[in-house]
Image (cartoon, rainbow, N blue to C red; front, side, top):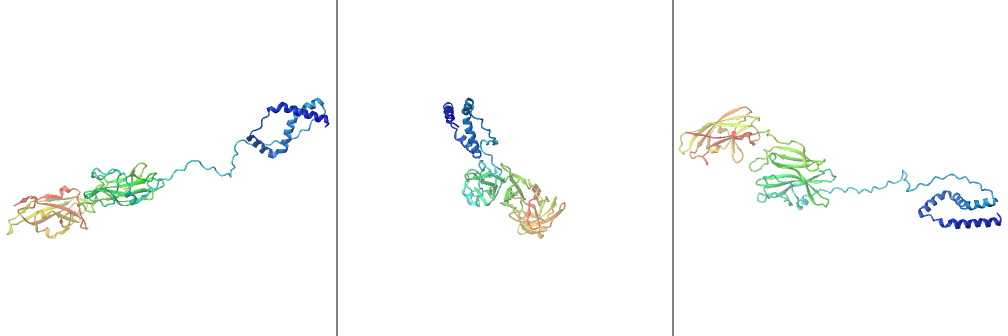
Length: 403
């Protein structure tokens, strides 16, 4: 290139800068970073291309004027794939992005000890209508027991038991609560839990006494969260013996809003251990008074077993209202305790059979207190235990005295 050519090229560069320089704007930081990444692989080629592009217009104009240079050979360049925009896609081996969802909080621990339950104030389910007003339900501080007649208040019976009743992964507490009135107690099995602040709250009543189910004696909590309650049709108290109640195990399950029975018998029905004895009697016939003023008396009675159970022993009670035993079938009596007095127990009696007995007494003409002489038939089993009857009204007779 001659000196004249150098002067011409320099002049063309100066003219180019004066014409286009004000329109050029520097690229922003993002564009610079993308450009740098592309140029790492093709730095030399890209640099040459940029220089050629910058020179092309003035050089071409100069060549057209002077026709002193031949065109430069065109360089063949392999196209480079364009870089993707935006964030790169993670590879298959990339670590997964942690979830931004908030974890579900764990259910409160509902295991409440006996001491904690006694220290808390709780709301209880309703007591049966026959319970006294002192058997409260709101803001109750349970008594450690045993309940007394003079102070009937809700009492915690025994130790609580535990299990996951509602399927939330945490255990709840089950307890037997009672409130005494007279010689009996109203009872209910109650489930307790804790709220999110750790306070003791009542989940609900599992089962409570009601008409036809007079007692709850025990309960257990199974691994599947069901509660089994040992219930009875009547509650032994007062003069009711311990062996009279019918007893059953019934199963209860939390249904989301309350407990419902899911297994076991739903009612007691007629006690299969009982039968129907019927007593009839003739007149009490009195004879002349002896030296002491007492009169001999004789009465014949008939007992019929109308079923459905054979009776191992037929007993007679209240014979003391008639007089002193003085012979007849009374000489074979096995005197056996009943509810407050002894009964004369004789032979057994099968279903559908009848037997007649004759009793002799020495009768005081003044008569018993109240003046009524009566007799009662009683069912005894092989263990000497006495039972009630399916039809009590035909177990009694008031004797008609003649003579």
